[in-house]
Amino acid sequence: MRKARATMHGAISIVNAIATGNGSSLGISLRVTAEAELGRGRGVRFLTGRNEDRLVNNIVRNTMPKEMIENNQVTIRVKSEIPIGYGLKSSSAVSNAVALACSRLARDDDIDDNAVLDAAVRASLDAKVSITGAYDDATACYFGGFTVTDNYSRRLIRREPAPDNLYAIIFLPRNTPRGDVHKLSALSDLFTDAFRLAEAGEYWKAMKLNGVLASAALSSRYAPIMAALERGALAAGISGNGPSVAVVAYEDEIEDIKSALSKFDGKIIISKVNNQKASVEIVNG
Image 1: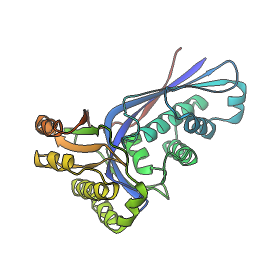
Image 2: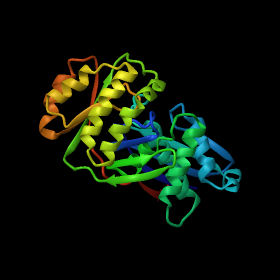
Image 3: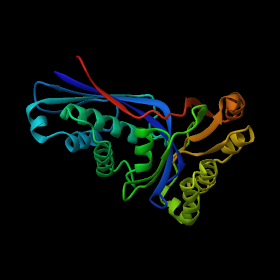
């Protein structure tokens, strides 16, 4: 029996990449752990508690030698603190974590970060859980901090740590469906402007502009974003394709922002920003 355990974190959007293929994200401390275990038998077994078996199956086959899967049973377990379906990079975090655990299980030498990310992104595209491959999200989950990427060429344009004293206040609205993501492309020239701000390190301006654009295109309520900005947030906007609203602020502003957001129908999660790179280890039993 051989088991590998990977720890990954989530992320929030700075700039949505769907309109242009270029995006930016920021790592947060909500955690995903994935275990990959070799045992007697053959094939792949899922104990994920999630409806992502096709995605996970693709990752296992992208990261492990065919003969290893044919000669062993590969069991995958996933635990996640990240709410699913809210734009908080749950699929990217899970894809990365499974790819990293499987990569460690398959080889004893150094892990190739780019190969792990590539396997996770390809699996996300194949399973149709992402339109662009979400390389911006994948890199922010994997490396932490700010990332700025060209998703179609899988190129990391800029990466840097975020100030450690920042928090993400995340608002999950109740009974709010996701908007039509194809409408984002109608504002592609303005999303390009937001991306240029992120590329220049003007992350808060980029996030605020992204919030205005994504709210308009996805027909999301802008009131929670404005309420957070009025209470001292550095930036706020729709994360991913929504419906969650992500707010970035210093600790002193958290209670005021929570109070403002609590007037809307939904749940609030507080998470520190994350600058920690993903980790993986071989564990006993």
